[in-house]
Length: 68
Image: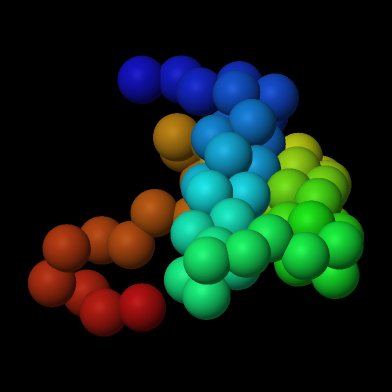
């Protein structure tokens, strides 16, 4: 199954944003600082995940039973 770099980045951004937002609202309020942290988490996850290429199917495979 192939997943594009853009789709992978969007999922990572949503996961990071949801995690940061859930943590931020634990005290019942969502402050400006928490909003900035959430936005930076989303942007960081999008950028880093998009920049890392997907591994191709034929390279860097570990042979079962052979170790690394």
